[in-house]
Amino acid sequence: MNPPDNHPSERITEAEHAVMEVLWDRPRQTAAEVCEVVCTGRDWSLATVKTLLSRLVQKGAVAAEPDGRRFLYSPLIEREAYVGGESRRLVERLFGGSAASLVAHLAESEALSEEDLDEIEALLKELRS
Image 1 (cartoon, rainbow, N blue to C red):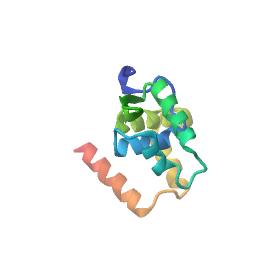
Image 2 (image 1 turned 135 degrees about the horizontal axis):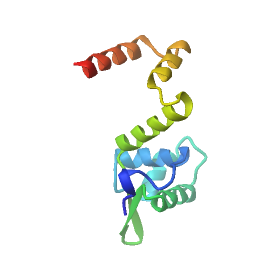
Image 3 (image 1 turned 60 degrees about the vertical axis):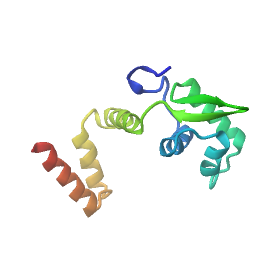
Image 4 (image 1 turned 90 degrees about the horizontal axis):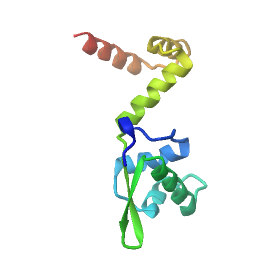
């Protein structure tokens, strides 16, 4: 069952997010297929991936479809909805709900490239028209 507002019932951890990214890129994968992507470069085993998938199923973020002796996993939440929710939580938690404060902080810490500034400027023009 999908949680309300297309959000998981609990927060997704960083490790779980890595698994979600794989499933968002290509739904209906086995745990072994997910592991082929996320275990590379990490000290993770297939058992670790199965545990993460199980947690994501419990949280309502992933569906597990029986396929013979294995399961095929697919996301129940959309990447855009998840990113939007996480972005709002970040702005609220760290910047008192002010997106302008976030941008100011990034600018002051020189975390914005010229390309970033051009993209922000274009987005603002689009939003105002």
